[in-house]
Length: 255
Length: 233
Ligand SMILES: Nc1ncnc2c1ncn2[C@@H]1O[C@H](COP(=O)(O)OP(=O)(O)O)[C@@H](O)[C@H]1O
Ligand SMILES: [Mg+2]
Image (tube, rainbow over all chains, first blue to last red; front, top):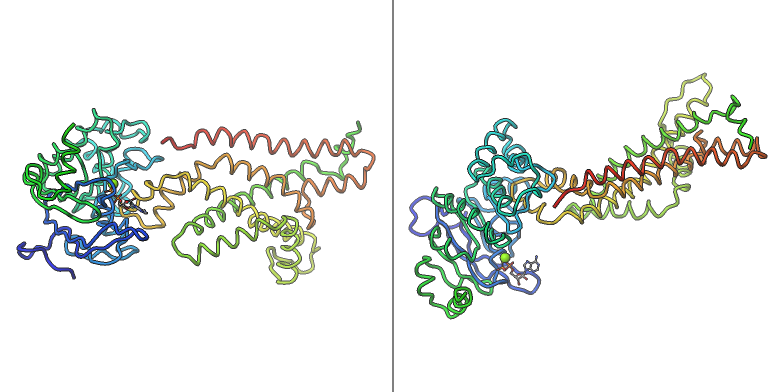
């Protein structure tokens, strides 16, 4: 078992990463990552391109393997592979920059696939669940279309509904709005804000400062594979301590 | 030109082409299934399976089909004693031999053609963006589910046209079955050429036309199927 989070009583942290190391060949992409995320916390991950944000996200559901260290979700260490890993991944929702909806399946089928195949839900129950989730993200009328027939913003909302259909304990978002036309960014962020308000544990890689301030409980600033700063959004945006963070903020805030 | 052999009861042209059709259909079904299995093995994470499937494909598809079909008969059936039909004692063995040779030929075509199906599907897998499999894994699907539900269906839809070409090649390749005495169109042609040598052009035209009648619509059907099946991204 991994170590429980600090001062959190009996409840283990929802996500805990200890001394996680990851290399791509000779490139050290994650350096000694230690991170405890208590249930319900919304963590914003920010940092320059190539700093390891995506890799951090992807190791949390083991889409990317790690070289050493421990990762546990809700106190359960990540299994290395096989059925156990698949089961654990089902508890961790993931939303990608490029949506990745199943291109050959309808919107409804995209959402019901996991509940039916992984959670063994009946088709009828899964359809009901999917309809209510599609309603919630505002695309109920599109349920019988194919992903390519939807706008980027709509596709990303379906992707969120698809992840939510698994009733995940944690949601990971890797730059969910970076591939969207500007006018579609807010429709996706709105869904994410409401999720955050409902107490979902979230890790969100994003450069949307408005969202970070509005929904974030905590900001991690990453550079060169390390977590360089770890504080509240307020602290981070008004008073960053490291030079790298100051430099980065000056670059993204001057526009 | 003298087409009188068409009405000669000794030569059953339609029957011979019917055997060609049956060879094609059974071989196509088997080759598709085996080809999908080989393709799945070639992309699976177990190195032993990948290596095995890769080896089979690279050996089989580089052997001439004639050799494979003769091997089926000489080695697999005659030396190793594989029986694909039951032999009734006291009955004329010709019926047994016909069924046995037909099935050996089908087995040979399946093994040979499946390697081309496998390679077509593998190139289809390369057209499926990696994000598709990633999203499927993230939802909690197992490797087999990711492949069977998300990757292979998209891969196969992407290669309907090439699979059509494989099928057309198979239709024509069934002529090799004449090498082990299966009485399909090419065997009939050999018989005709022996007995009716003076009608060479007419015989040639009839047999060629028969294959065109089978192959041309196949190409057209697969062409339009390919358009319908393609996955919009
Ligand atoms: N699959 C991979 N193979 C090799 N290098 C990779 C791979 N994925 C990412 N990298 C490298 O790892 C570093 C961190 O990448 P990433 O986590 O995607 O950064 P970020 O999301 O912060 O932009 C980058 O230098 C990137 O080029
Ligand atoms: Mg990234």
